[in-house]
Amino acid sequence: MANIVIFGAPGVGKGTQAKLLAEKYDLLHISTGDLLRQEVQMQTPVGQRAQAIINRGDLVGDDIVVPLLDRALRLRSTHPDPDSQIDPWDRQIHGAPHRPEGCIIDGFPRTVPQAQTLEFLFRRMKRRIDLVLAIEVSRNELVRRIHERAAISGRTDDTEEVIRHRLDLYDRQTQPVLNYYRVSGLLVSVDGSGEIPDTNTLLCRVIDSKRKKQTLNKQ
Ligand code: AMP
Image (tube, rainbow, N blue to C red; front, top):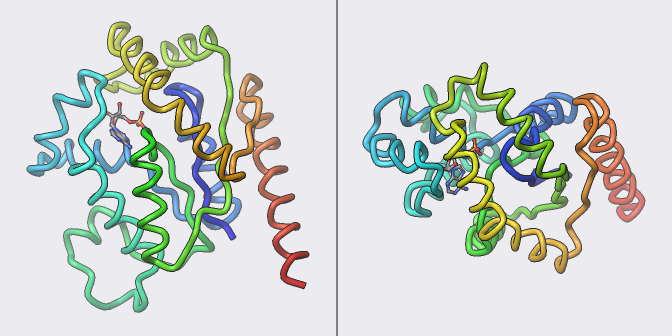
């Protein structure tokens, strides 16, 4: 363990929690939003295609986001020899490779087909997803948090209208992914209404208990 998917609506604090968990459990943090923003910032062809879509608050096509995720997963989590065959461009994007304990994926999957794709990518690496952590927060609190973030993030997709659209898309396209993982038995939901350390404590409790069970099962 552990390969974890962290899940929740825009503004729920997935990114913040994912970073804290990555540090604590030595996990590779892969955020598809960050990967895309990096491409936009560097004005790569992919970034140029993605920019307007992100600004509108729409979902970028799988033909754009899946190869980015695939490359990040393979480069940083399973590369057999950290010093060989790394394209300097990839090294610049993803940093120096090392082999962490597992990964925490934030921002993907956002649709049921993406959930199926993720399973395929893991199977191909002879790995599996161990846990899906869903952070739950009321709609009012989400809107409040996004507004707070907008004041400091400088993100072009944190405007009133775009926020509404992103939340709407989440309800229609991303929410069904929860059911997908509920059926597979991987889903654990956590109350995210408290402060950052409170939510972090709850998430760590879930991970620790999962790890304990895995260790017991191995014995
Ligand atoms: P995030 O930082 O996760 O809120 O993502 C910011 C934006 O990047 C989203 O509103 C989408 O436009 C795009 N994006 C990130 N992840 C995905 C994904 N898995 N599928 C499609 N678009 C994505």
